Length: 339
Image 1 (cartoon, rainbow, N blue to C red):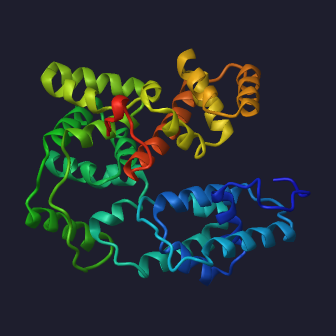
Image 2 (cartoon, one colour):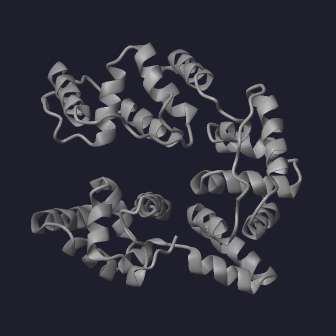
Image 3 (cartoon, helix red, strand yellow):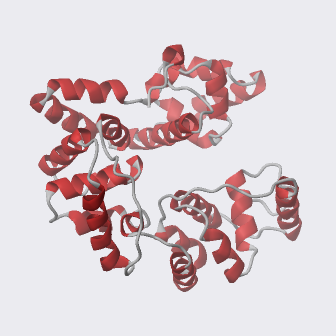
């Protein structure tokens, strides 16, 4: 971030949030962060690490923008999600991050299963590694798809395949069984406090969402394994999966909504591995000037790793799925929602 930049107009919403929070005292920041979900904290924490010598005028501009946005609102809606402790450690230092995290968790009624959402994927994998496969499947189904995919990467091929197939077969779990699992985890992590959880978990759609976030090579192996065991199930999962190339079927308005949420560097990386037809669809849904700049960036971009392209495409897809869940766009041709 340049020192001579004084306004807030060129900042993303995440960058504004990072500046606002880091300018607050620890107690006030903790009070705000306890209402944010893990994904939001992860993004803000990452933005905090990029802050350097922010001029006072820019801080004032961010605060002014914030006051303008909330002045006519009676409340701000926020969701619960996954937390990445490492991001706060990087942004604020280990001691301050630990204090903040303790305040957040102590101030919320986090249940046993919900606590898993605040852990690193490796930790979750170790916790459930020696549990019954059906318990493993229930835990994986309970997690967000991207977190679930990350946890599965810490299991070997055979176990991973078994878990995904069990997730696909899940439809309902008895509330008592779910509560017992929740209580077991709760006693291990946070002490005893009761929580009511939905008894509906898993299913083919859940399995497809998880598969969307698994690395491409591993995804192919798992799908081959499912296909060998149950070809019909493999077809159902494949039909529900939404991959980057499927963006070609999103209508123009939907593409425009998605583009407003994607950083330019992420879009450039994602399009490096896209078909020409999809690139052209993106270009036509931008202003002429923006499209020309994007084309220049693509041409200037040198060779990149396939893994970097896949990571960028997954980020775009994650935004697209979120917008679809919020009813902002429809994924799939003919107006049919695919996820």
